[in-house]
Each structure stands twice: as C-alpha cells, then as structure tokens.
Length: 424
Image (cartoon, rainbow, N blue to C red):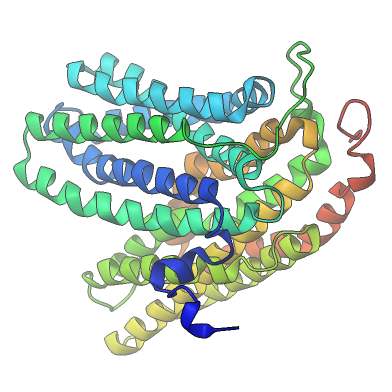
C-alpha cells in the first residue's frame, strides 16, 4: 500500500473512526450538536430567567418542571409506539418542530399558568427525543454501527451542552426579559434546524411493523425488559449525583473550597467527551452491554466510597484529591452505564417494536430525573457517611442483579415470533 496516497487522519477523522464512511452517521451527529447547543443554552439560563424575568418563585419553578417531567415520563411509550408505526424519522421531525413551537411560546408567557402549560409541552417532547433518536440511528447506520454512533453522539451532546452553556453566560449577564426571549427563540431555531437536517437522512433499514394494528403497548407488559430498564435507571443516578449531590457535598460536608465544584464539572465534561467512544467499544452485543453496565456499576460503588471519605478528612488538599478521584470514578460509571444501556436496550428489544421498547427502556432514566434529585439530597447528602454507604450498597445490588435479569430478558430466538415479542 502506498502510504502517501492515504488520506490524512486529523482529530475529526480519528473521532469518527468506523462511522466516517457513513454520511447518515455524520448528519445524525450534526443534528445532535445543533440540538444540544440549543438545549444547553436554554438549560443554563432558564432557571435564572424563570425567577427574574417571569417573577416566579423557586417552588413554582420546581413544581412546573416536575409536572413537565411526569408528563414526559408518561408520554414516552406512546411516542415510541408512534415511531414504530409512523416511522422514527417522521416522529423525530415532529418532536423537533413541537419543541420549537413550545420554546417559541415562552415569548408570550406572562403568568404562572402559561409557564406550566409551556413547560408541560416541552416535557412531552423533550424526554421522548432520546429513544426515538436512538431508534433512528439504527435505521440510518445499521446494527453494526448503532452503538458506535450513539457513543459519538453522547460526546457531541456533551460538547454542545458546553457550548450552549457558554453562550448563556451573555444572556444571564444581561438579566432582562429580552435576553430570555432571545435564548428561547435561539433554541427554537436550533430545533427547526435539526428538523431540516433530518430531511437529508436516508434509511438503510426500516424499523417497526408494516401492519398498523390498534394501540397496544407491549413493552409495558414485558416485565423482564422492564426489570433491566429499572436496573439501568438505578445506575443512572449518577446524573443527579453530579448535578445536585456533588455540589452540595462539597459545599456543606467537606473542607474543599466551594469553587472546586466548577472544576469538577469541567473534569467530568472533558473526560466524557474524550473517553465515551472508547468506553463503548464492545458494548454492541448483549454480553458486551452487560459487561459495560457492570463496569459502570462497580465504578459508581467506588465513587460513593471515595466521596464518603472526602467528607471525613480535615485537610483541604486531601479533600480536593479525593473529590477529583470521586468525579473520575463517577465519570467512569457514567460512560460505562451509558454504553451498557445502549447495547442492552437495542439487543433485548424486539425488531418490530424497537422504538416503543427503546422509549420504555428510557423510562428508568426519565424516572431518575424526577426522583433522583430528592433521593440524592434527602437520602444521601442529608445523612452524610451513612447516606453514601447506603448509596454504594444500592449501586452494588443493582450491579449484581443485572446479570441474572439480562439473562432472563435475552430472548433472541423468540424475536421472529408472529407478534414480535415473547411473553413475560
């Protein structure tokens, strides 16, 4: 081979790796970057403007967002069923346009009732976005590349959230209603852009069933699949742990400086962007997905132990070292849990009901967003060392039962059954 004729491999080419030759994969990653930048812009600035620009209390904001989260949780299996029967691409386009409309309506919101309505609209569309996107990825790149593309999507989403957060700093500094309107309209524009980019995506495999039977959410009756989803949901508590638990633990229970929180979040983001692809290698199969999920679980057990120790030491330097090590372990748990979740959610879902099953699997993650902050604050932070020990035990139990539950749910030989799903 003449190496002089080989194409140069820059950072982007190395990042894309085996998916570089798939135009559909590149477009899906571009969609992820656009969408996550808009979402990061909104999330970073929304809480401030809900209280300052709209004059809402923290309790009102929390209640409204909880309503949005619950509606999003309930709507996911139904939206997944629609994606199976109308096409994941069409439903994902509709979700992006729905979100664009919802964010744009924030411009007209002037009272609490309007805030709750718009937040509920956003909640319905926001949580179903991930599993429908995941279903479409498989239809765009095929079975072999679906987990590699999801891993790269996760890295791209982390990058987009960071970019959006940086842009939100300008709006937060302005602190006006106009600045908030610009933020939500910019996010709406990102949603529209993502929908337009989806029009350019070609499918290599069709998902769902050609038949159009009446509404029947089979995934909710598949107890074995739900059990695996529940274990994945428990391990996904790392999201609330990083966003809520770590800042409170650093500030209230350690001798480390409060300013360390920002640095810990940066460490997490950088490691996630750099290592998510590597952590996902081999997770494409049931066995590989289970192995990744177990690695994530054990990493989270170690993370809880290290954070507990950080609260026992009196030296600020030692506390800082332990907290950094804890975040590194937490990030490892995040990366491997994500990879295992993707692999298992694909591998254990029937072909004919793929989108619906993926949406149901995502219920564990969505429940974490609803219940996780309270579980972490009340159950862990408020109880100090005991709370961390209990959390470590929960992570360990979830990790140990994952194997038997996955084995029971693995029904590959029955996926070709007439109704596309095996009995629970």
